[in-house]
Length: 263
Image 1: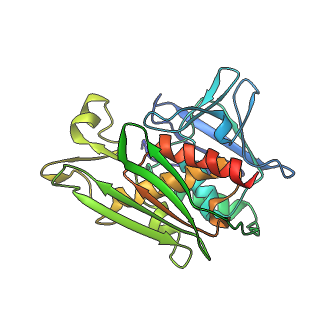
Image 2: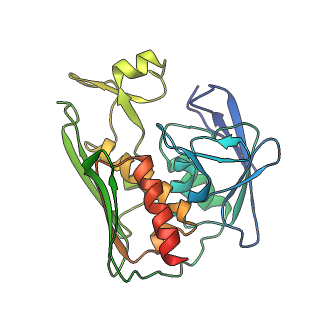
């Protein structure tokens, strides 16, 4: 099956969404170097906002013209599992896609690697990034006593409409990690993604949903993963993070702003 995941020792294999090829990620701990993706050519690409190459539909990291695609779901799984300092050795230029969520990464990483104690990080001021072409798209980070992230999804679709989801550590990781990526059914047909990605039209979703607001939950998943590009697990932030209609571009801009703020 296309969405099946194969695990052997410290490696995980599944098909990639972009190339439809079977890819393997072999993962090993490193000594305090953060999360690093090892390109098939041997290039080491750190999970850093400084290495963001593209945010069109997914978060692509690159170094010296070597790219790794679909990094956000892996990083979300790692953040929720509270694991880090990993070398992710890949045999292709994208990560295994699985079912389009992050639970398979969470389950794999939490079963193979020890939980890291997170040194909490306080913020002295509010941070904000705004879409240059649409002020209704923004992310705000406000100082708080613990980590909380929310996403508001506003669409013209009768099926999705307006959705909101708020997650903090008092909730199970399953509440966000299970949420799968989604797209319109017409777009899925055009890109031949019908069996890969949740598809919807004005009559509803073509597959059963785990949650009524699964699309908004997936946006929270993407945001958590992208914020790991700050170099710090976002669950360490004593911050209330509010995202309104934002995507990977603003997510990674906020990660970079956080990186600059906390040094």
